[in-house]
Image 1 (cartoon, rainbow, N blue to C red):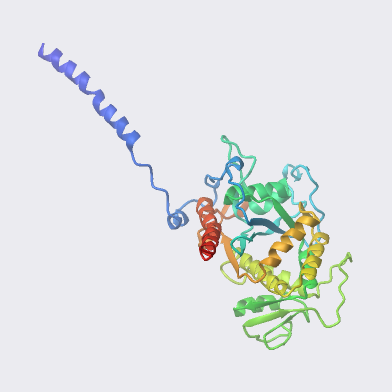
Image 2 (image 1 turned 60 degrees about the horizontal axis):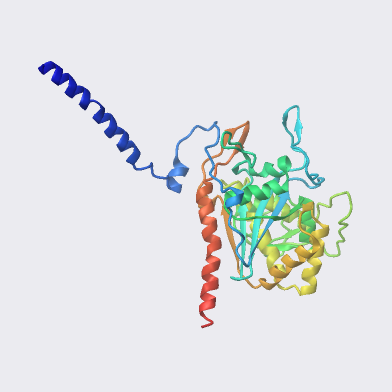
Length: 386
């Protein structure tokens, strides 16, 4: 009897630890989310598939904030290239991805906020890893952001950026290197500050004679050491540029400015510094536009419409954007880059290509905070009226 009683007690008590264990698992505190610094330092293999990327579904994106206008500026990595036909399939060759229409090595989101009186430039590095828009719950596909246009089209790139940054981006305008150079020449060149000797030496070796001048007025093309400071990109006196010629005239200020934008091997920052140079050129062009009359601004809008590779904006929409920019021409231009604050891992190798993993949730949060400052500025101004 005692043995039977003991056996019954054992059988009754055995499940208790199991039940307790299940309850503790249900109540367990979730694993804390990694801080950006911890995420960046996480040790992972060099050759592997990218980690899961959390994006915002299109149907969950909030409407565009009143007064904020987003325009995606794109530059493909070709001097001349026909635009990608609408509704065309991803180009392939022998079953492999084919670069047929060019990759968008220059990606910059321009935000004009007419309510808070702000101009914001947000650049994205070209080799950022993204979640493709044709991913499913069962299969998550990844790629480089600068491949999206060539493979799926500009609208797909707008959707990709919208979902990764959490803001609706619908309008885009795309240029080849030559078209961008033409716009710079149309505006009469630019002035850009060169801060390091390595940058100056690198530029000196790739520009053409008579297009870039140092702070003392000397031609950078000439050998010898040149000082840091403000460099002037301008065309030779009396030079006439044939914008419609099939032959590219490389001896122009615009071409030298584009070459400057493309430098990336003068420092350890690589592509991050290249996105900064792109913002430097846009900043310099914006400064020139501040002195424009409205008629001149409209002339620039017409030039943009005639001198682009592909856009979904008509003349009225480009003139409308020019009007916003003209109204904000006295604003200080603000800048942000993705990845934000250098929170990124070293490039990984997947699908036989190098690409950069980005902490997209962190960048999305930082970008939203960046835009949210508009409310603070606008609210402060509203308070002054009472």
